[in-house]
Length: 320
Image 1 (cartoon, one colour):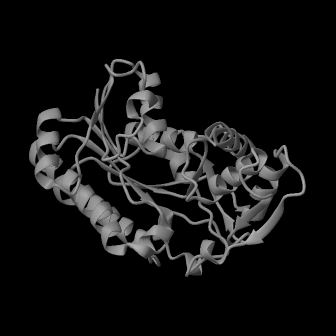
Image 2 (image 1 turned 120 degrees about the vertical axis):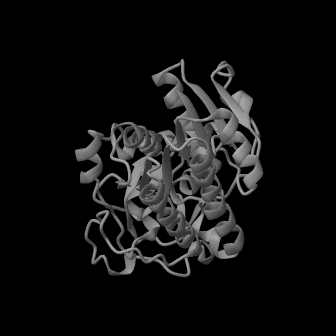
């Protein structure tokens, strides 16, 4: 199998590449990423199976050349500017990266290898979250994005399903809720908490964890279950369909912080609100319904929220 993973050197892409390598070591995996830092150390011993191509996906000529030459049988399109807070600071760059990059791949597939399966990794941020009334969100919920990141992903979502309808390219769309797990950037809430606790334990900062909105309820899923869902969707799902990737449960952010603090080796840690960590627009309760994913593919999660948090904290203990 010839597999292309965009964003391979990111948090999710790295986990996915290792998962696919373990599934079938005869697969040929090519990863695209503009960030090459520590790539070869990360995939040490796997160089014959996992190769890196350093191109900008907004360069249509480079993307066409890659698809034409490699002719991937599956594309996992993960590459994105994935931070909501960053999207408020740089909305134009967010739209350029998240939309143009994906459309360039779809166009190249259409021209050179239209039987290629394409997984368009999108987000639950696309949904009309302000009016979900605290109920689990299903795939047929209204799309009404309220931040630049979500707007860009909604555009790619629609482009993807349109290419299935118009050109019969086997496209699959995932709308992912919150990911957590080892290797995640501190730009995301649980990883941010874990990093601060690890730094406190090492004496690198004062015993204060700075937080944003702790009252929010969110749906958190371990990254290792997320990439398993991607694999199940592209191999067992139905082309043209949209799938929520989520735990199906709501977790209060303050409860997740409490769990992480319970694992800490340092007592008497103070909690303080940092206004810079608060979003311009936030929603009280967001969680998803994963019944369609389970029904169509047979997927089920393997990791508990406690295990995910413990592994995230251990990752930061090693890193700091």
